[in-house]
Image (cartoon, rainbow, N blue to C red; front, side, top):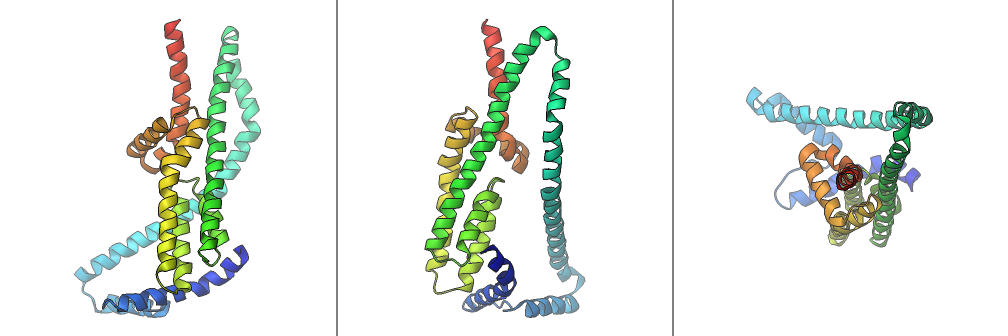
Length: 264
């Protein structure tokens, strides 16, 4: 399916555009039905429009190129991050030994215990995220195959594992599934089914699967896991949502130790 998707998607995209054009025509909205016609309309608008009318076009172009730059940067990160992660893993034991040499000998047993508990929280979070991604991959793949969406197995697995980054997987999977549903358009049943699958999966994942699985892995109740996601999103946006739960788990370990010292 991956090979077929790579080969066929450039041919299927114009078909989906034609479907959208035909549907919009029913409401009196004229949208060019192919990429060349769309480019010609943009060119004629640029030639005929005044500078004032060009402002929306210029702004749209700026947003477009900003988005392209963002995609290229994200791709670069996909290449750089695994390389960085490899070298961190390779040198981790030497770095850890160096850190422990800076701790007074009588405090080293306690420090090792504390670091071990933090390590359990972070590694549990990673395992929890991978487990959630696996569950979502199965849900999306099975649902899209049952809906008879073209390349449904591949799109479902891709959407599930990209969901390690919040919202990325579900948005990507939804767009690709809708394009395929438009290509094989036989009525609105399949489109409604695709929208229903992703809406239901988003609700179940956000309110039950992630808080229960990831929260348990890091020692947080579902309530505290949801609260951590809300606070992280408000404080630091997208990045905050990614680091909120593991950071909350680490803080729980540290505050637990502080409270224990205080009581003793």
